[in-house]
Length: 565
Image (cartoon, rainbow, N blue to C red; front, side, top):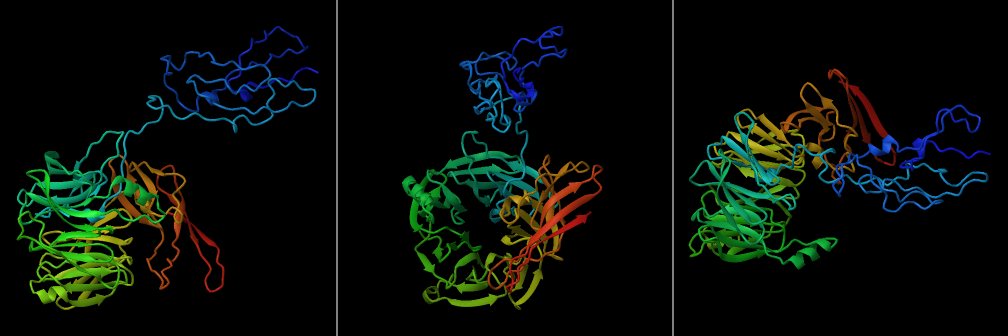
């Protein structure tokens, strides 16, 4: 019985054998004998550059350890010196020759090599966009013309009038190091075109915003979490710095429920580049760090308490002693009234309590008068006052912006903003409100008429829970707009232009309202699983699903909808 011939396509990197001439009819057959050769599918799986020894990718390479006859040829290496596959040795059937017989799938058993670092023939990143917007640190210029939004280690400067990005203040860092994150932005008190930006690695920079240049830089030895200029002495800054040693931080991170590192309240002098005072310490995560509009009070808050410090009157700055107050419910947000001496505290239960504790009267400081208003059904994530103190803004899990007229207790509402409200910022001229949402987007709303004037966003799906709302298997492309269609919040799609790093539009495929039951179980929302675009880009098809759980002893299945647009 003649030996079985192994097809060349089933023997990756097989050793070449001399081909049989066309006029050789050894077995009475007129066909050519199969020639073993390296299959193209294996060689083109990963693009390869020059070898480590300097030879090009087309230069033959002699195997370092030639295979022993009768064994599986799994030690042979490709042109980059890496093993491309591993072939199991299987016993030959009776009457078959063992050498060269492959009874298992060689493609399924290959060990694919990792991409070559620095390979100029392979894939590489040419541009990146999106990023995570830090909506809790938005800052407006004194003339309300520009809005600064942190995005990781950079800060994007937007024009409030046009909504366009006019400048990006980039923080460069070596590729081998982690880039620092922006933790605070504050405009210069006298130079309208300059701003201070603090980073979590302890760096503080003074930027010329419109020019995009660095005017001055300072370095604090410890990581920074919050930064505020001393309103009574601009050469001093108030910092919250992490003071825990590295061993304590590693132990905290290794625990199943890690504790927050110790945070210190220090006064840092910019002219001497030294710490001149360090008085207070905190062992919980800090939620707020603000100075009152009259420059007399500083308020710092964590989840269980808020502290008040009277500024001025000390030699090195930093104020006097801190008086601490403990609300009955967990704190979610705070805001200082600009003209009256009280602090508004947004609580986890949805109640907003005003503490009249910013007076000079010793009695009012020890036992402050309190008053409360209540509309939110869930926690109040954000609070803000207009600069004249006439209105208070609040927002939370309901995706509803509430405007409180403090004199009359009248309320106005702007509902269905798309996702949970995380931050609220009012322009100095009180003409616009910046609403930061939990889906990585910001809405700028005009105070007159309560209309959305500008919408900006990163990649919205980056902030979604992938266990409940999985991403799309593919990213459809819109050639007309040079944009991609990305999943947004449940029931929405995002049109995003990666080249210009711009959010184009949000498409709402199903109407939904964020309502939470009293049991705090979120109502299942429909989410998009598949999107298809026609070749001419004029039609779109979507598939939506919603998981219906057991209700009242009745088990519901999954619902699906196919829609054409």
